[in-house]
Amino acid sequence: MTHKTPTLLLKTKSTPSDAYDEYFTNKNYNPLFIPVLSHQFHAANLAHIRDLFNTGALKHDNPERKYGGLIFTSQRAVEGFARMIEEDADEQIASDSSKSLPLYTVGPATSRSLSSLVTSHLPHATIHGTDTGNGENLARFILEHYNNLAGNKNGRGEKLPLLFLVGEQRRDIIPKTLMSGELPEGERIGVEEVVVYETCVMESFEGDFTKVIDSYKSEDYDGGGEKVMWVVIFSPTGCDAMLRVLGLDSSSNDNGNGVLVAPGKRVFVATIGPTTRDHLRLKYGFEPHVCAEKPSQEGIGGGIERFMEGRNGK
Image 1 (tube, helix red, strand yellow):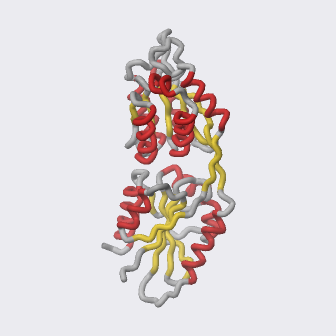
Image 2 (tube, one colour):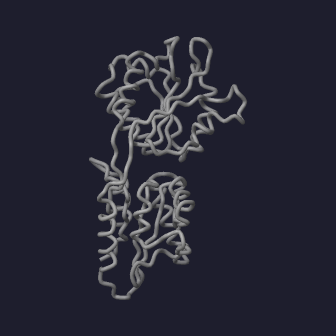
Image 3 (cartoon, helix red, strand yellow):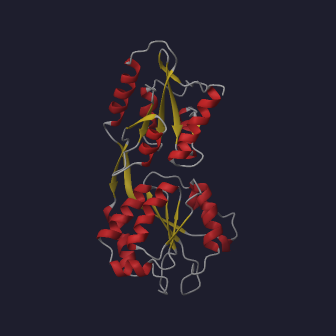
């Protein structure tokens, strides 16, 4: 029987189906999900956004319009926004407010989450930035797109700011880039951040991760070739616990050879993108073996395949 490479996906498995599960299963991996994060939505701030919709503060023909569009860089922010729209927003006003409303997003997963909401509740909104891949690229895209977008001003001819729905832990690259003092004043774009969810590491994560690694270590090894396990990281949160379980700290690195956790058994690490990779580099001195070129299952899978081919000398 063909050996399937165990692949630990440090995320909650999506329901009713998960694209990572389907992809890695079909590619002869054995995917296993270990949830890392727990999330709590910020009810008061989501209520504030609901009120913006219900009062027409986002309607394109309102001379007192407050914002020209919305920015999303996480699926959790989309989820909180979607719940608010579906459960609390006035359906007709939300639909009207979607006219000429750009929604900026980063990565295909977040875009897919937004697409279903647009279809059902915001029929006139448009989604942009799907293929930008990270916050820095998205910010550059927004500068080009929004500054040339008709209807980005209020009734007084002032450029409208963008509303950025975020978690309490985030990088500031997007607002810094859009509001940079190095830009000509006419090109700057105001950004107002609203925290719509909070994140923390699940109490069970380190124990769950330890159990899987210990089981891998204790599997029978016949010496007939090296066994490999991959760990895929989707967020900087929880990285310290993962490295602790693997026995790594700031003074140790594997020089690209993988973490030898038992005779003949190595663990390699892949990240969903440069934010998590840089977090591992800067905070822990650890260089992940793969960083996805695009934040998707294909991006992760393709990076793993190229790494293994190079390592095996193919």
